[in-house]
Length: 151
Length: 151
Image (cartoon, rainbow over all chains, first blue to last red; front, top):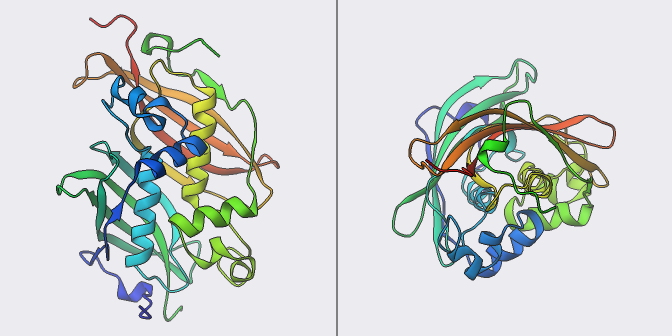
């Protein structure tokens, strides 16, 4: 997709669905956990069974990383999507081995940046669904988008 | 460290510093980016130079994952640290190859959980510093802590 988006192209209500689903494997859950979130319920099926999660569950930070992947693939900002902060993340259901995740993002708000006049700040909400269309995560994040015609 | 913390042990003002620094390499920045945030400024030095970041920079989601690792190592909640949502993340400086990150966490607030009577909800602020003691990220996140003596 070569159509890169500038600030002027973005407006509240504009929606971006992920172009695919992302299948989460037990291997990826454990590999991520070993590196970044080494807790029993993210590392081992048996330990997961006897935990709060009642089974192996993905780290919420793995889920957030997968969501970034799906957003980068489906929202093509000129020069790249530069994070400008997270307003909220909620993990609403555990992510299990074999789950397939997809995202629905919507622009909530756009404004010019006071500190960076060549950019605007775009606020977006993302809903993340599994293969049963249950919402497993939702987030509100900000990113920068360059002006096509800076003043 | 075998001293596991329960809800009753946690109170506003309690602080947890990371037990070590985490050195970020160019290899880890690129490897994470290939998988979860494949944007030029996270993948390639030359592309980084000509970008907003003026050099290779870590994905903010890699930084968040490293912060989770440092928190898991330094805040020992009985049964594990179960995320209960993010209130805010701000990435305040780029993370570069060779940077060493450390965290300072502070409990902001504790309350009993209405929906899960065996747990309390703990709100914590984390400041993330590089080797020059610059704040590169700050966050406010919630986690669950089990009651030692559930009602």
